[in-house]
Image 1 (cartoon, helix red, strand yellow):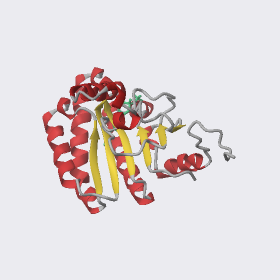
Image 2: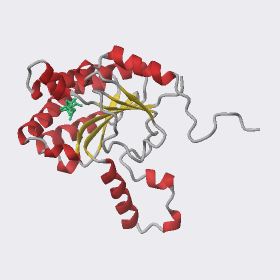
Image 3: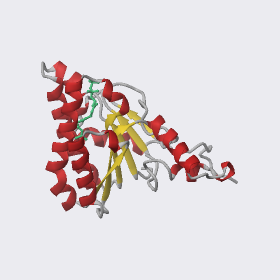
Image 4: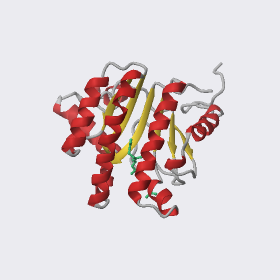
Length: 233
Ligand code: FPP
């Protein structure tokens, strides 16, 4: 199996999962949270050093106000419940995205969890929150310009240091659930050579066994990073 240091997931399909069962979208998101909890545990068990979950995109603000509010409350409750486990398992929480735009109660809980778990060394759990890949790239440009970096000094490594993922490896594998086959503004710079895995399974049904299927598929991928894959002479 090629090395897997960073797994990123687009947790899609909570709404459709709920609709198919005659439940509310909120019920779908609740079930999605249960799935997220189990996948974090499984990744930790497997020793995957970085896990990134797409919790809320900048585009998600266009959803009904009530759903947006529910998602942030759910996230706050999730962190509150999970904090002891994160500490016990030495999992560090990190956020990719613009935390300033996040409602106060959730922002406070996120910051508290990040502070408390800052010394966790077993795994980094990134939550992409109020996140947009294009915005992240524009933000990196703004930061470089603000530092008056000379154009000739800008290279890919320096640029990457101004992304939310500074110092982290690029995702080796990106999983998207629920049948859609697109990146939806996720980790645009970092995904240049990521392997992609799509499954029809909706996020609430993405149990550990589904993760293992994705990892088995990944195990057969030949990662060439633009090379031929043949030994050079
Ligand atoms: C996609 O389902 C999911 C989201 C927009 C948010 C993901 C949130 C959770 C899994 C719950 C909270 C997060 C964490 C990390 C605990 P959708 O609503 O787009 O589904 P649909 O496409 O079927 O409507």
